[in-house]
Length: 264
Image 1: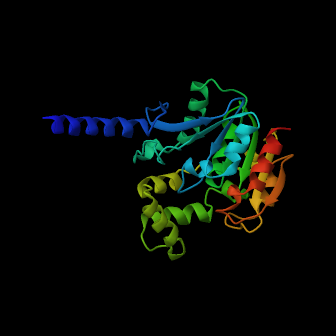
Image 2: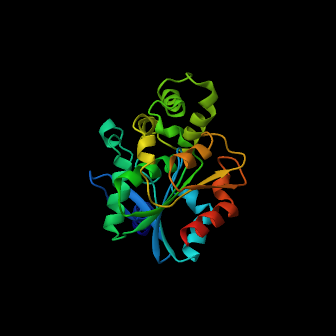
Image 3: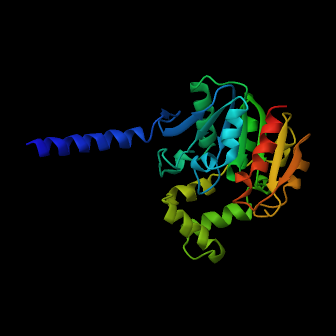
């Protein structure tokens, strides 16, 4: 009997631990549960992760702790479909900028206004659109990206969508698809994210009036020439740090550039 009770206790403990591992969660505008974390106290800043990734990528990068140490309240979240957040498959769960509505809903729930945004790779694409949607954004950093995402038919978006929905259609992207599967990412969701990826036109970029910093690795040409993005956003500037697309955001130089920009 004691062994049976012990087994039940262990099972209940495991269930509680599994639930706690997903905390904290918040229900977004459509009921989708979004996982988030907060580090530090002070001026609010939200970090938006890239494609085939989640908020853990920021926790492995020095910029998160550097911002907290510099007096920021750092919010990271698993964008819907990623990490510990819900992973709906329906198209309606991703169309019409739902990811950005999640970010805005989270910041509102947390009572955080006049916040900064740091987005890397696909997170930078989301950042660009967020600047057109939320007047609460004070400053923004966009890393690992050029202006090419302003084209709704951008070949990178189109090719990734096809690679995820038509196996073998793009052999050059097969390694990325295999890595996504290996990491536990949901490939149905990843295809949706490419299908409904936000597009910010050059005209919209030209109307941005808040301070913007573009950061790119000196060996990173994955998403085009970052200078083209600087040319498209009035008053923005470019900082080049060491590293390729996957490594630049994890460098101390990236952290230094972001902190210096956001603390001015």
